Image 1 (cartoon, rainbow, N blue to C red):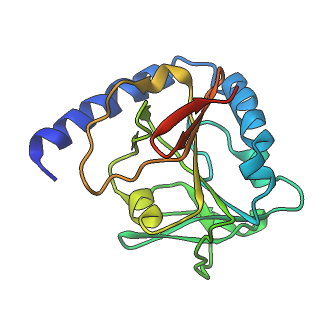
Image 2: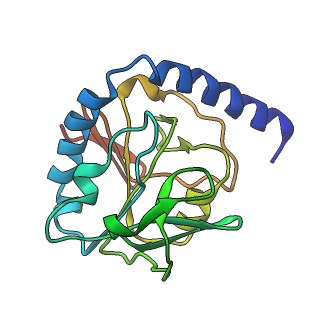
Length: 190
């Protein structure tokens, strides 16, 4: 990755982490996650691949505890992230202090699944800015699963610096709207 691009991304990360600390994340989480579980893509999915919220990220507990869904969560081993079955009583602090399963039997999402993706920012072209390790971009690289990004609207911008390794999401869900990317056409379905 070029140095200037990395500097631009890090500046946005720092700014957005500071902004996120000022938001009512609990209230935003309820509104945004209610919209996520109401999506047809979510309701019709066979399985849900979801991050375990940590710190002041949007709370994913509604999704993780959603009834009648097979739920898979990240486990980091070395420099790679794998998704494995979610069992709340089997969680341990992982490499970054984030709760993750103690054991790992990697599972790959199919076309009928959804991936709930974390981010610090995104743009109107459906690019996201994560935490800088590239775990989700590598995980989503060849996946046909629907990639859903729950994020407060304050973090949507016109342009996120990106390169060929950055993977677009399919749906952006905020407290105000749901945006869907469909053959290069963005639709606000809220």
